[in-house]
Image 1 (cartoon, rainbow, N blue to C red):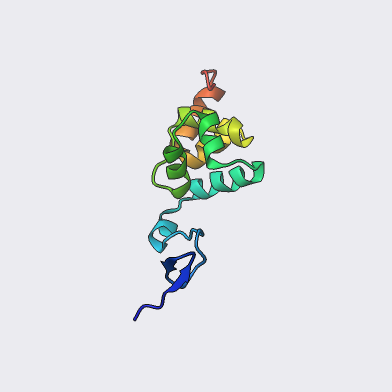
Image 2: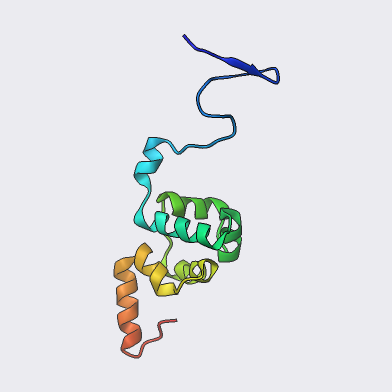
Length: 115
């Protein structure tokens, strides 16, 4: 038995209000510490995903996938993401790629180029 209501001549199922988005359980389970981290910082700086993606030079879908945990950026992209969120590159890289970031930081401290 389905209960439907009419709004503006269109039928809609009861439940959450039209136009709202709730993440399905499967998507919530995929979120990663990195995804939560950049989402939190994006909200703090008051930017949309579209703005962040444009400023970091990545596609909107790519940025969205970072936030949901479907993918993580490489260290080079972390360099571009960091200033968008007002963070240091190592801080971002350490969340996205901890082993690589640690290695690069170690090389930088030994006189290598860490930029």
